[in-house]
Amino acid sequence: MSNKTDITTSTSDYKNLYADIRQLVIEARSSVAKQVNQTLTITYWQIGKRVSIDILDSNRAEYGKQVLQQLSQQLSDEFGKGFTYSSLTRMVKFYKAFPEEQIIATLSQQLSWSHFVELLKLENAIQREFYARMSHHEGWSVRTLRQRMDGMLFERSAIAKQPEQVIRQELAKLEQSDSSLALHLKDPYLLDFLDLQDNFSEKDLENAILHKLEHFILELGSDFAFMARQKRLQIGGNDYYLDLLFYHRKLKRLVLIELKLGEFKPEHKGQVELYLKWLAKHEQQVDENPPIAILLCSSKDKEVIELMELEQDAIHVSEYWLQLPPKEVLQAKLHKAIEEAKLRLEVGDE
Image (cartoon, rainbow, N blue to C red; front, side, top):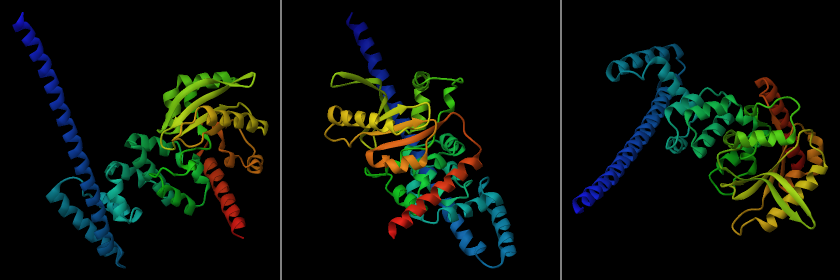
């Protein structure tokens, strides 16, 4: 009996030993892979800098092209793949797109060379910075980064409606606890994954979101955590039910989401304000920031939103789209919003 017990114990100990050692090997490989990636990325940046300064920035463009071809051939002969003419020109583009070495040193701790290859497809510098910072902050895979770019996340983010100077200031604070709400909110939200039929109700919309909750959270942002649906609020002698309740880990605050089928109406503000005050009184913890609301509507009148100054009351009104429009349409809307934001800043400075 004792021998059988000893064998069982020994088998159990061996399984634990194997599991622990296996985990050590996996972690070591992952650590080595990250170090190799960071070293490789910084090396590519340094090559791009050297080629750019020593060869391509001279006035002899044709001479520079010949030297680059010769350099490519010699490096390929000695080190193999990775140093084709197009690869070297990509390294130059990499250096010019991200000229500060310290930024590359920071980003490359999280982002691979494949991330940067995707980012280099963007011609707009502020877009590149946005996606680079967000990829680093949220730990996006290359596939996720590509999906976010294809889904025009930047154009739909609330911060994109601001002038470039404001965007850069807010991106610099992304890792801080006081980062702007606009970095974590969107307008519009893309709900194309819900597969809703025509003539759906608010209940259908809510049910579809809950059925595809994982997709919905990915659209909201990785720091959102689902808490409740149709949460009951007892106020006076009446019962009220808020549609969806989330918690944002980075912002440390509750986020209520109200769903409306039609256009935003001024009376929606009173309803949401009531919910926010109840949450602040009964649900907000001592170490949390005040709750905010996202009011999802199918459309909104910008002049009405501005007159009501809803952002000051922690209410973010956003449209939801069931399909992504042509890129040109969204970019035109974004350009118009940025010009209006610049005008407001100029008026404010007078």
